[in-house]
Length: 152
Image (tube, rainbow, N blue to C red; front, top):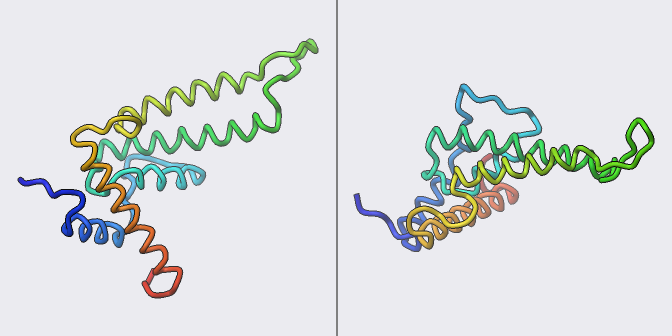
């Protein structure tokens, strides 16, 4: 099968078709919390729609949960501060700092699994071009919906 160049008319049409489709569904056997959904949508937008496999979607859900956990822990840490007082009255590093470091390492590992951080497998220029075209198509769709020119 011949690959389509990312800067071709066919790729632009495919990106517009993909942008018009509803978001990819979460695999049935995977659960997300309400707070995970914005992260899920963001992770899905990081790739062109036709790049996702079912196993990638499972890892994407894990990444979304991890990112939501990072955000929640960071908000609490912002409130508590990085230095807290223990039961003996001694100033110590807030244990949430360690939790955030562990979550950040997990996030990076999941992103590597999905090939989302750093070099893309395959022709990086072609994949990046497809992703840029699809992001632009999503932006156009949102503008059309906001103007009432496209049914939601």
